[in-house]
Length: 471
Ligand code: P53
Image (tube, rainbow, N blue to C red; front, side):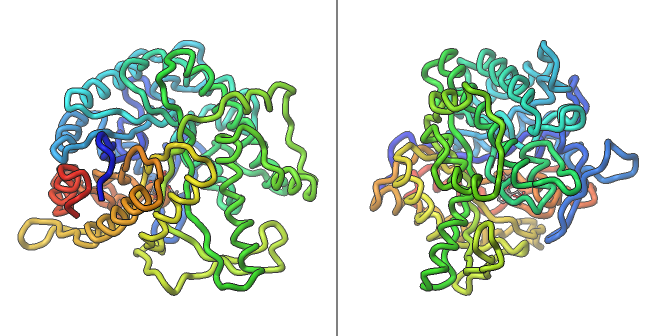
C-alpha cells in the first residue's frame, strides 16, 4: 500500500512546550507561564501571577529557543519533510494589545523557518496553541471578551505578512474543542485564557468564547487568503472518537451526542454555519450567545481549507439519564489498553477517525498530533529502548495507510506529537515523554538538557525513507 508522493512526514510541537526563554527577546508572559507542574491524574496549578519558588516547567522547557539549530538538525536527521510548531503570541505581542509587533520575536521565527527550509522541511504553523498573552487573560478576561478578535486578527495578519513566503500551512486555534469540558479550569484557561467565576453559567461562557474564536478564525482565513492565495489555513480539532459502550440504542444516542460536542467546532469552521443541533440545544438551555449582525456572514465566508487534528485515543460512553446535557457517562473500554496516564491506545480508532472526518467534510486532512507518553530512562547499554513507542506508531501508521488506500481518505501529512521530549501540556511533566529524541531533564527541572536519539529515532527515519512501507 503506497502513500501519495510528497506526503508530509514530520513531527509537531508547540512553542511554550519547548522554547523556554520565557522572558527573553522581549517576550511577555503567557497563560502557560503561570502553570505549575502536575502529575498523572493531577491537573496543573494556575497561579495568580508568577510566584517565587514555584516550579513553572514552561519557563525553561527544553531551551529550544537557544538550541533550535541543533534540534532542527536532529529532526532533519530523521528526514522530516515538515515540522509543526506554533508562534508564541507573546514573542510577537508581549502583552497582546500593542499596536506594533516586537521585531526581535519576529526575527526569531524568521531564523527558525529559514533553518527548516535549509533541510527542505515545510513549516506547519499554529497561531494560537495554549499561549494567550497573560495580560489579555488578566485585563480582558481572555476570550470572554469580544476585543480578543481584534487582538488575534492583528497577530495573525502580522504573521501572515511576515512569513508569507516561508509558511504555507497554517492553523488558527489548537484543539479548539478541548474547552467543551467545562469541568476543567485548565482546558478553558489554555484554550481561551479565561477562568470561570463562581456561579456563572459555564456552558454559556464557553460557547460565547468559542463564538468569538470562530469569528476570529474566519477573519484570519479571509485575510490570510488576501495576503497569499496559496495559503492553506486549517482548523485544529482534538479528535477522540466516542464509541457507544454497548449495542443498546440509548448508548448510540449518548455516543452521538457526545461526538456532537466535538463536531460542533469543526462544523462551524468547515461548513460555515452553526448546525441545527447546537441551536436547539442553546434554545433548550436558555443559552444566549451575543453575536454582531455580520458574524454569521464572516463565519460563512471564512471556512477552512483543510482539517488538522490530533488523535491520541478513543472514549466509550454509556447512557446516563442524569446527565441532561449530553446523556452519557464515560466508561472504560475493555477492548483496549491504556498508558500510565490512562490514555486508551486504539490504532483502529485512527482509521475510524479519518473516515468520520472524510465522510462528514470531504476536506483534506492532516494528522498533526499522535503519539504515546511513556516513562523512560537510559538502559545499561546507554540506549533508550522505546519499543512500546515503535509498536504504537507501527500500528497507528498501518491503520492510517488503510484509511488512505482502502477508504480513499485524502491525507496531507502525519506529524507525531513531541518528536523531541518536551513539557507535557496537561501535566507539566517532562517525564511524560513522547520523543524520538530523549532530553535529559526531569519533573523537578533537573538535568543537563542533553539530547539523545532513542531507538525509535532510527525506526522513524526508515519509515520516512520508505514512505511508510517499512514499519
Ligand atoms: P499532554 C487533552 C486531550 C488530548 C490532547 O498532551 C491534549 C489534551 C490537553 O492535555 O493536548 C494535546 O502533553 C495538545 C498538546 C499536548 C498533547 O496533546 O497533556 O495539543 O499541546 O502536549 C499531549 O500529554
